[in-house]
Length: 244
Image (tube, rainbow, N blue to C red; front, side, top):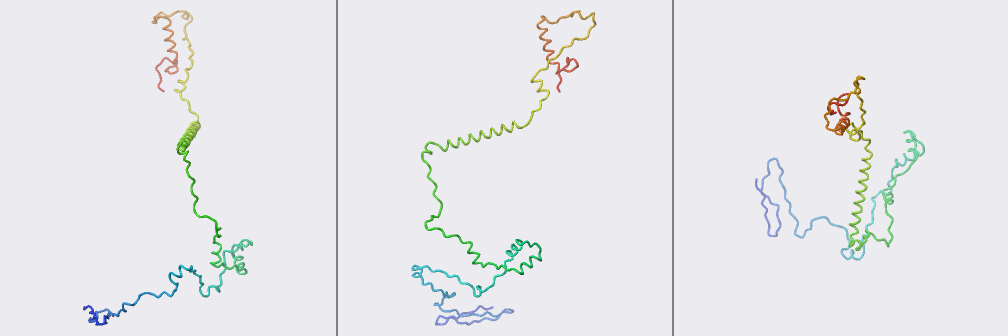
């Protein structure tokens, strides 16, 4: 393969002279001469706006142009409006709707007419657009720490409301069931002492042994022993203390 050799003439133009052979299976490349240095590439802009003087003297308004034949184009039927009117008339079946659309015609609105409804009303000339300025902060309230006091009051009121709601929930938990242990802690039931059965001839016989030094000690011991027979085992309540 030999690369093309360009020959430049004395006039500065490039001649289309190649010294290469065609490759196997490929077409032979072709070369073209380029235009001169004064040639401008691109597409010609036919718009004549007048330049800077015209832009400074008056505004250039763009007049909308319609496509040829668009004004004479016939708009189709508005089937949504036709179905709505048919339902208002009391027609419910498909055949009745078909006959209603065949005998009535409601054309669709053009896009320009539909867009005209969305236009906002023109604002009065003395209206001021934008966001209103925030009022200035009172300096006396800042110096007196009035905002801090308000925050503390709000926090205290919130804490009081939270405490009241918590107490209300605790009061609504329900009845607390009493157990045998809680009942024994609250009150001690009175015990009725019953004397043992004796023969009539031994009822007036006193005890032969008295291990207490004085009657007061004996009375206190018997009172302590009879104060908790309900927690002791046995029919007479003289056994060991029960655990359950």
